[in-house]
Image (cartoon, rainbow, N blue to C red):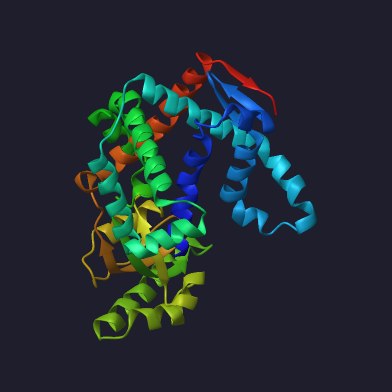
Length: 321
């Protein structure tokens, strides 16, 4: 029941701004806080929306401070109301409409999504002080605005294959598309006396011999390795290209799962690595649709804000708050 209540609060924003059939005397009894072209927004409408949409916040405010808290929210909520009213006006001007089947389908989708019976839906609406007829009407208005945004903004957004490919190349690691290896190592630090390198190489060969006899790599790493990974059996976690020393990377990526490298030198010392696990990258084909969706959402956000600003620029708006 809590989930559907959240949904109802979201569409209540539309419900509150569409009191277009108020009598002239009713308007006079209420304070007008904004005029948007030929329509008004009243202070009572604004306060009603704040009470519903900011309910979770206001519930935490001490009773004596609620009025002050609501006052602080008025400006932001009024801007939202103005934006919504402008979009509804634009939809009507464009001649957009909808039929009963579209509304019926939307209600069916809502009931299915929140696992609601007809009775449960009506109960939730009553709890919000809303009749089913009003709910249906305002849901229709929301669908109409959605149509407008699709027509005016979304259809004009085109994401090219080149944009997708460039994003992929720049964000492989973030996308989880790079191949990753989990490795362990046994490490001997570079001796200060270079003449002792041969002694260290002999030690490494002894390690290889012990491994060939069946001793556990992680146990030997804990016993012999000269780095912090010895505390974890030589486990270095997951690595990807460019994340570790090139010598370690080259040796690790050449191994098969469970295979141990020959001892090799880096500028820091002597290493023996074992490949524990290989996670193949998703590859471009597996993530290109996700990338396109991400780029589309970014483009939509920018164009939608610009489009809303355009509606304001050509409108008559007078704020009396």
